[in-house]
Image (cartoon, rainbow, N blue to C red; front, side, top):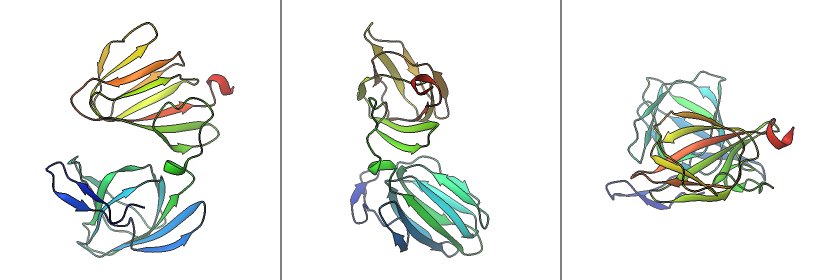
Length: 219
């Protein structure tokens, strides 16, 4: 957990992170369950999720998620009994913008995210955010000039861009073409040889890479 850690907004303002919920209800080696309860206009302060999690709604009210990095807010509407899965995400804040109380149970999946067991094959991302017997989803985050070096894709995969930048895939044959990726872009790629993904743009690159394990070498 990072509660109490100081991070900085894009303008340099220091921000002290809070817990991801108000009350820890249950914790073991596999899950941690929180209660989040917000009165109208109340916010769950800036916080960071290190593990994918499920949100089970108990009392519904419209919400707004604001991002410390300045990305546009996301408006959410849940219903009582509804279940939402969310991967790890940048520092954000949840505000109840509705007229009634909002309350949920937030279930952290501790075996995923930063505690995910090592994957036998070469990692094709920075960490696993979700996995089943059929698919595996990775997070890739590259600052300008950074690279994800020396990996080989054993399965077909889908890449969904979250934060766009100019990227280049280098192989043993040399540098590849530069591609401009925008938020929401989707690409399908086949398995291949050793490669390096390079962020050659001026902004941070972030994506979800979804391996289709039921194809490729797992068949």
